[in-house]
Image (cartoon, rainbow, N blue to C red):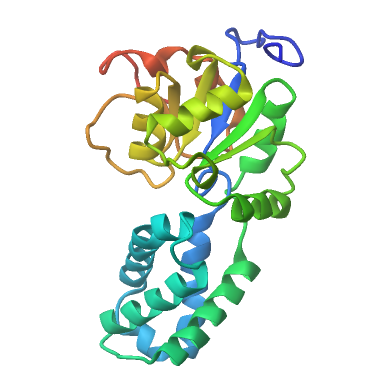
Length: 264
């Protein structure tokens, strides 16, 4: 594929990379806030879940999800079993012991709410479509093929994204260099001709940099990274020109201290 489908040089100067790699969850698909909204909904039906602050419940749900994720991705357990166990553990956090049958009911209710409330990160879909006219688009995700294919269909990006590279398919997950190398192999570009956009400091930013790929950090929740390297970052897709300028910049592979954070 040639660089930039509609001409390689942007009017403001600089060129887009030949390939833009995107994370999926919490970069394009709004996973975290969909989880939060779903927990708000089921707390109305099960008041014991209101015995701890919503943010405490939300962050613990996300933590438990991450703990079980590898087993689900590798097929060691089903997503349904893992979700049911999460609600047993969340109930314990709230001072309540519940039976597996009750956890199943709550889990199914949560899943229904999640499917009803799911959404894209604001501005992400038009931004991906905008870039797709001038660059190859690939999703690099720590998830299963079927789940991410379904999300792409839901988002209406299944015909926009050129490649889907999943941890399930590769057998390695971000920040492992193997999954990034697989993405480069699938898209047929060198590391220097790609840029990675994602919300996770460790998985997307540090992982891509270790693989020799430029990274731009979607620091949506304004977190403070460790180690505190200076990496181009943005907090919203609502200023697409500024985000695109970060993709054109070569600053994201400079040594720490050489690149200023921008486009916040």
